[in-house]
Length: 154
Image: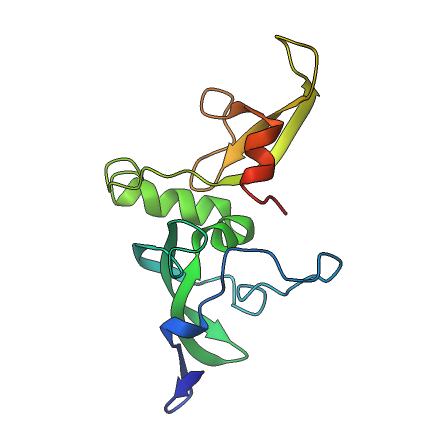
């Protein structure tokens, strides 16, 4: 539910988008960031667990506008990263970095490359970029297929 007052919308915590994919793998769930005007601000962050079902993830408190109405609410960091990587990375730099803020868990953002495993030649390894980090070969890592499947990548 959203509470509104004088052209202002605020997302209730129970309305925050879950970082998990939709139940129907063929459907595309719209991101809550889709209708947010590009001049949004990231004001703060917290680690959330969505009832410990999916493990911890970072939620960012966003202030912006949707359809000319002021809007603010908590949004999954991955959705913000997909929308505006530069703005997210600038936020983390401004607050001292994810690691400095005690955010230790990493979540995959995108697969950049894939190849057969080097050791055994069986299975696939994926070179991935993580949510909250730049696309930088010094930070990105090779992950085994089992970890990719475990992370429930979209």
